[in-house]
Length: 418
Image (cartoon, rainbow, N blue to C red; front, top):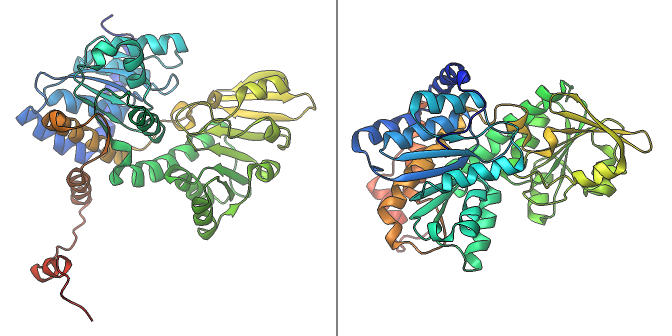
């Protein structure tokens, strides 16, 4: 299989959208220009499992400009932009295996296709590629130099693999770079999730009760944007420190057992399973709108909702109406999958610029250092994180101070006191 797409004729529109995103990705563009001259990835095969969007396309093009053979598949069955996938194949000669709405069997078939290319480096978003590689192709996993992981959910899975001693190559946790999680997770997820809910429902957020499950960086972003739209935001948490932070930030904080009675909108962003369950559905208002912005579709117990319902229908694109036995209706967005990519276009290009700059530079780092790295999960090197931040500031026309020699000496000494 050379590639697997919905419709190659969509390529022209996809190409123009890739170019539109590229205009707002100056950091990645500067890396691409250097990669094009230096070819630091020459001869390397890279298999990537990422959301196939305009921003991801620019990362794939950058890696190819660096000399790599790049193979791309989707990290979520509903996140693929079919026109973008077609453009990558037709105009950039990058094999893509992704179709929006593909079933689970096709999703894993596509994963296996990019694994069969015997990659030297893998890039993952959710760790499905890496876990499949380990479980089904252990002989190929042994040959991988290293990989990168894009999301919180995936990092959790890969750290578990490392702790159990089954991880076969080093991983760079791109998700944990400051220039990723502080911006992509907070501002990207915040804006794109609200955008998706509004596109799917066309409901007014002002004056509503908006429940955010989880107050990590993604939850912070969603809560801030919902408040900005005029909603009364309720945060639910299991971590007392994060719950305290949400309270100090001015949000209502309570258990889901109480929030479920008040909420008009619900968004889960925890990375955990069964956050909204049967007992919560039983107490929800008629007309409650439920969605998920975590990576996997496990945060909402959809099976329980199915069992509680007399009927289900798609009332409009991305909106399913479940009619419960007592007549109440609950609306599920995007089949409980990643709503910001299934019902909208995902993060803005300007914030993915930093995340994918980290990916590109981490690929270069792995190639230079994989022989010295253990089979463990590593943070992005601080020098890469700061380089990305500096390039972003430069692109925004922002200048900052530098330490004087006196300040450098002061910070490195212990003699100075009161």
